[in-house]
Amino acid sequence: MAEHEFAGRGHGEFGGHRGGGGRGGRGGGDMFRIGRMLAQGDLKLLALSLIAEQPRHGYEIIKLIEEKTAGWYSPSPGVVYPTLTFLEEAGYVTAEADGSKKRYAITEEGRAYLAENRDFADAIIGRLSEIGLKMGRVKKWMGWSENGPSHGAELPRLVEAALENLRDVSREKLEQNRGAETRIVEILARVANDIREA
Image (cartoon, rainbow, N blue to C red; front, top):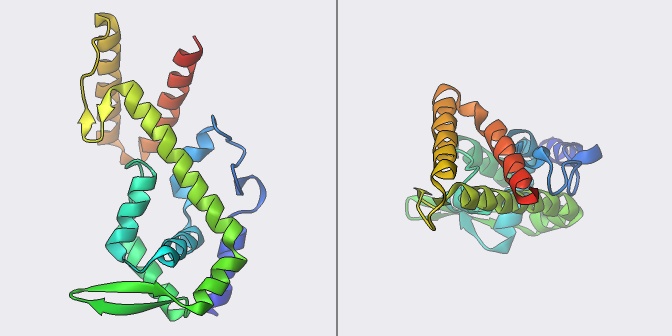
């Protein structure tokens, strides 16, 4: 039963325009809708794909996903660890005690399942990488380093003021509604493209 649910979810999430690059393409906002993109079945395939590269702890999987999206998306332990438990119960991974943690390794059954769904897994990873690239561009345009806003080459005073206003408005909006993150990034990405083409 578990295997059937996994398979159905994985295939279903990539129906229509959601497979591969998606209708958003390189400039589309769909690439930023991570909440929709990484549904439960997607995360299972992604975790299995990362474990197939080498045995990993749950925390490593969280950090890898965060790195692939340039810090934009970091799945919570409350999502990742139940996913790993599911994979273990389905027979796709084994869990071995490693101090106070568990290290997960893929099984032959898991490799076979991943091979059957490799296109879907690659599509998920591709989307995450695309988001990471776009977030890198947005951060660079906003004058942010990996740790937040930074100051590089001097910009005209009015441009600096406009950027500061964008930061303040974005920060205020996020304080009111954390769910506004995707919308804010979509807007900033469009603005960056408009400036580049101006």
